[in-house]
Image (cartoon, rainbow, N blue to C red; front, side):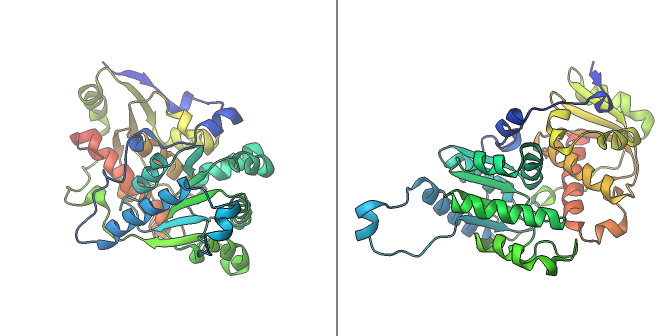
Length: 345
């Protein structure tokens, strides 16, 4: 029998120290490596990206020359502080970024772009810089600029960390110089965006979304009356968070996104009753963060209501945040497939 809980009844409190200690790859990527990444033979850029990241890892662990060795060693091209992996969703960018984190000796940090901006909000900018400046490597997954404030903030943060000798590595669906396009008046912030772009050497990785490569389409949503029976069949003996979808998205507005990881602590699976299309942008963006955290922890889903490819409006799927929404749909679809058919996500 499944043990039932409700996310709508959880309001996690997280200290600043706990927030900082949580900057490491999620369990989904807890033991990945460059060797465990499987490049698509039809996409040569994938194998090239692996080799480029291996080389970057060696550079992070190799001390910069100093003293006489620096003086007599001859001038070498000045390497940029950062490595930026650009590519579509589902091609394994996070796998490679986590592999880099595992390959490099500490101290080091790994988190999503949103988690770093939340860290600044919790610790203040100066304390965040001081804390991260002690690290050898800072990995930033899903680098995205959603508003002018993020642009100025991350421009300063990356510049100060690079000046402190910290190596940076990021993944994104957008080239550095194009960050922010379609989301706000990016042309007014070209200086800040260029400062960001100047920190990185960019490597492109091509390919299809591996979560759907050769796999069947997402299963159709269940009837609401089926959920309890299927929950007991699929998740017997596990801790299941079962919620009405409308109540859940309403509750998310009262929980800061930096706490969504703790919100689902101890949850083995989720069941959502009556999934509906989200029509408000702010609600949709919060839900994307939850989808990312569920995918990080490989939490399977059973749901009734609309299928996940109808979770966001057509306007959202074609707007400035479309890459976020496509990623969320891709990840939720994989988790739904795992919940209903047992296929790995």
